[in-house]
Structure formats: structure tokens, C-alpha cells
Image 1 (cartoon, rainbow, N blue to C red):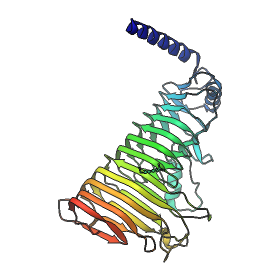
Image 2 (cartoon, helix red, strand yellow):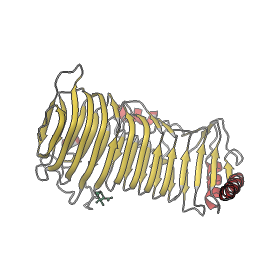
Image 3 (cartoon, rainbow, N blue to C red):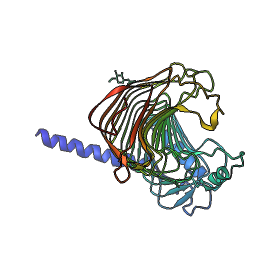
Image 4 (cartoon, rainbow, N blue to C red):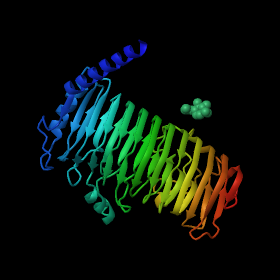
Length: 396
Ligand SMILES: *[C@@H]1O[C@H](CO)[C@@H](O)[C@H](O)[C@H]1NC(C)=O
């Protein structure tokens, strides 16, 4: 009896869900978007969004197969609907050449957001070319997908290619899952970080493939409870906590706490697992603590394990030479990190003289040069311990 009642209820729920989907499903083509990539779909996409966001039921904006030119999209909330989905089967294509703004596709204050499938093509080549030519007056470029101030967000199966600047940025959010995303840009493209997280809690990035010109995953101030699982990186600059402690404006910088990176693989990247802070004394109160880097493989990585607290690009453009970082790094565990280093120093802990690193822990590390020749570990102002098999021998 009980079970047939349950299945009846299940049936009813399914029917309601199907009906809701039919009623609250906004196909951008029905609203005037053209799938041939030549006319701007911004108005149709905006109309679909305002209908979906204003719905009292879960609602979906649907982008079917085809190529949709999109000059800019601001998916802003708060929404009346508690679940809003952007489902992409086709490709959203940015105009070629910079058109202004910090981001191309933005979600702001959208709780219960899902973005699924599809491709976003930032067409960043002309911005990269300008930067490569070094004229000095190039646009920054736009981040392709920016998610701001939102809770309970899922980004699934998205492919981002050739962003002008970062591919995906998550800022000011709580509870975000990014899964099965694929990110592609040339190794030579400047500032094309794959996924950047800051000012956010409870973000999980799982099963991503990231080939790009800058950091694979980068972690900014104010990040807590971040998990990065099974991400493959390369080409690019690897996974980086930081840069932190730049402190341009005298405001106390929020710390980074409880970050786990597990099952990452790196091929031909500049760095593997990096923590990086500016060599500047002004960032009072800033910290990185509670970090676990585990089960990573490295192939031909220049700096497989690195803490760099002496970051000072252009030798003082930001007033950093001869200062020591105010960012306190503690409780960082490296467990089961294996593979090959492209440089002699496979493990480098270059910490702050005024705020030495504490609680650095190495366990089961096996890093050699390509071909198996021994590499080295170098420590500066770093304290901690090692256990298990640790090669190169620990300098802690
Ligand atoms: C970080 O983890 C520690 C230990 O589990 C916990 O006590 C602390 O509250 C966590 N911090 C945040 C911001 O979640």
C-alpha cells in the first residue's frame, strides 16, 4: 500500500515538473535571436531572462543549437523564481574586438542559478595581440563569465574558449559547484585565468580540463571552504592561491582559509601548486591557512611545489622591493605529490622574513627531474615537518 501511494505521488510530481517546464521555458529564438552568428541576440536574451527571472516557478532560458552573436548579457536578480536555469546547446559568441566593460556575460544576485552545457567564445585574439605588441594602451579585456553575489549556483558542462581576460570568475558567492567544464585558450594568451574564485565560501570545482595562458585556477582574498577536485591543467601557470597582499588601498585584506586541492594533474605548466604573495608589508591581517594539496601528478612542471612570498613583478612597480610580506601562511599540507620537475628546484618555500610560514607538512612526495635525476628542495623562513617517502629530501 505504502509503496503504491509513494509511486503515485512520484508520478504526480513528475507531471507537475513537466508542466512547469513547458510553461516556463523561454527559447531565445522564439524571442527573436538568430542562430547564424551575425545579428546581436542581446535583446532576445535579455527578454528571455526577464521573463524567466520574473517567473514564480522554476524557469529556463534556452539557447538552442547554432551560433548566437551576443554583445553583452547581464543576468541580474534577485529573481522571483527560486530556480533559474540558462541551458545552452549552441554557442554564444562575443563580438570580435573589445567592446568595453569588465565582463561579457554576468550573473549578479541570482540565487538558485544553473548554467548548463554549451560553449561561450570570447574571441579574445585581438586583445591578446594588442597586449603582446606591448603598446601600453591596450584594453584590459572582459572576463567571459562572471558570477557575482549569488548563492546555490551550479555551472555544469560549460565550455569556454578564447576569453579576452579570465574565463570564469566567482566573486561574493556562497555555495557554488562548477563541474565538467572545459576551458581552452592558447598557452601564449595573456591574463586568461581559467577559474578565479574570491570573496566566496563553499565553492567546489570538480572534473575540469583547463588549457590556458595564465592560472588554471586562481584563488583571491576572502575565499573559504574551496574544493578543487580532479582538475587537469596545462598549458598555463598552474593552480595558485594568490597573488595576495598587494594592498593597494589600505583596506585590510580578507584571508584565505580551508582550501583543498585533490587529484589535480599538471602537464607543462609553469607552476603546479603555488601560494603567492606580494613582497609588501602593508597587507596587515591577511593570511592563508588550512590548505591541503593532495594526490597530484606533475609532468614537466617548472615549479611543482612553490610558496613565493617575494612576488614583486617589474621590480618595484608596486613599491615592493626590500619589503617582506605581511601575509601569514600556516597549516599547509602536501600529500602524495608525484612526477617530474622541469627545473632543478622542485620544492620551494620562499616565505616572509617577518611572517615565517608555519605548519608546512610534506608527506609522500616523489618529484624528480625529467628522466629521473634528483631535484632539490629549498626553504627560506619555513617551518614544519615531513613524513613518509619525501624526495627531494625536505628542507623544513
Ligand atoms: C576552517 O576549518 C577549521 C577546522 O575544521 C574550522 O574550525 C573553521 O571554522 C573553518 N573556517 C571556515 C571559515 O570555514
